[in-house]
Structure formats: C-alpha cells, structure tokens
Length: 376
Ligand code: MG
Image 1 (cartoon, protein in one colour):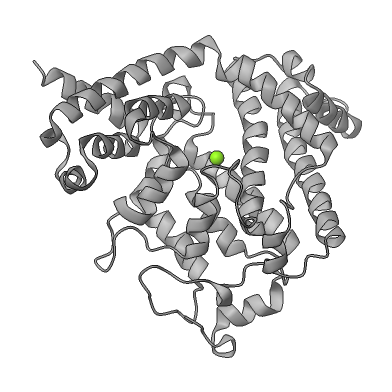
Image 2: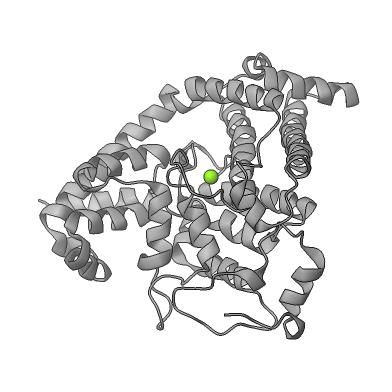
C-alpha cells in the first residue's frame, strides 16, 4: 500500500517532521482488510479515531482503575487514566520526534480490554477460563479491536494498522524473548503508563484517606519530589503540596526519561526503525529513578492495592462476576443475541467472558441483580 509522499499531505508532513527512527505512516505494513488511503488523515490518525468512536473505549469512563465508583468522584477512572497516559506519551513522542498519531492510538487502546472492577475482575475471569487459556486484559484488547467491536459493514473489529496491533500484542507477555524490539512509539506508551499510575494512584489514595501525606513522605521518591517543591514554594498547605508533588513527579520522570532515551539513541547510533528493532529496549528511566519508582510501587502494592477498603469492594465484585459467569455458561441462551455467534465459534465460557469483560462496574452489578433474581 505504498502512497506517493509528494501527493499526500500527511506523509509529506511526517517526512519533514519525524526523526529517522520514528515509525512513518508511509512505511506502515497496512491493514488486514486493505482500505484506500486518505490525503488529509494518516493511517494512525484513522486508528486513533476508530478507537475513540468504539463502544469499549466509551465504557472506560465507568470502569475501575484502582478505586471503585462508590468511593467518590475525585479519583481516576480507566478513561481518565487512559487520557493521562496519552498526554504524557504525546509529550515524550513530540520531544523525540516520534509518530504522535501512532502513540496516541496505542495509548487510547492500551486499557480497553480491562474487565469491570480492575484487577480483581481480571483475576476472576482468569480463574473462570483457566482450562482454556485464561483471561488477560492485554489479549482481550486485541480480541476487541480485531473481533468483538462490530461497527463497520466491511470487516469485523476496527481493522487497525498492523503497527497498532503489534504494539498491543507486545504488552501481553513482556518477558517473552522476542526476535525484535518494539517500535519506540510502543516503548514510550509503556513508560507513560508507568509514570501515570505511579503518580496518580498515590494522589488518589491521599484524597480517599487510604494514606496520610506523612506516610508517603517517608517513601524516597515522594520525599525527593517534596523537597524539590519546597525549594521553590515555602508555604504550601497539605493539599497544595500534594498537587505540586504529583506535578513534580510527572515532570521529573519525563525529564529523566527523555535524557536517558537521548543518551541511548546516541550511544547506540540509532538511525532507523531497523536499528530500533535490533537494539535492546531503549526507553527506560535512569537507574536512580528506576530504583525510586520501584520503592514507591512496592509501597503502593502493600498499602493501597491491598488496603482493606479496596479489598472489601473487590470481594463483592468477584463474587458477582463469578456467579454471572456460572449462570451464563449453564444457559448461554441468556447471553445477549450478539454473543450467540461467539458461543458457536469459541464456546460458551469464552463468549460469557467477552460479555462480562465488556461491562462497566455499574452495569455488572445491575446485570448481576437481573440474572440472579430471574433464577427464582
Ligand atoms: Mg494503563
């Protein structure tokens, strides 16, 4: 699907602006179902738009990131987390002259496979499907964009560019020894995801009263960020200090990451996408920041992700999902009509998991009520 760069505004623009090691739309491997190109909108822009218009993306607004809806409305949902990731990833991409459209498409799609109720929802579905490959939110995101979204008469799924699909598939098992490294655009989104949640999970936990500011100030990454803030602003109250620390944490990590990437690109003489593919991972924080981030993540894991208030809402959610799964597998006719053909292809268990995974937190609880009361 080679397109003449001189007659295509987007390709011309990318040729002028992007680094030689960025993924240029002109070099895209295209789509499974070929489509004609557009002069005013590049392929990755089109992918981005398709993701924004799909229903799995809209439902992110009512899915738990870490904290459930009933805990208030300050904290991040999966949608706002996704937008924070896209925002940080775009900043990184622009500074490095990478393909921002591709980075945005990857960011917006990265969490659309998450079931309701965060990681506890994922754990339950994984148990339900343990004899048939299990459940993984990254793999589910691929199922959604390749199969389950049904918006276009010409093809199943969203028919996204191969580079977006490859980027998402690289998230499934990061430990797997792969023949080639992911594109820099893919690596940058992964780093932005980590910067976003390390900063916002701590912020949300403070707002919800799960943590006290003093506890976090004992964690070296937070302490260092707080010291940086205090050197500039002497008289902040706790709330102002907290917000300034979150801002500083993002800013510091982005700065550190950019400096490290620039250094690696230079050191390894990276000049092309082929060089990126051959090199080991190029996007990583400095060892100093990596250690500090690990310290914060260990702290959050112990004190937030396992907090009794968080666990309590989780247990109810786990039970509701498990009960719905059993009911639907025992009687697949109770699945909505659009899942009936999936029962025929993939079996009742996988089809039930697809249905459950697509639910928002609220819909899952309502549907649980309907399914269990109709049991009589
Ligand atoms: Mg994420």
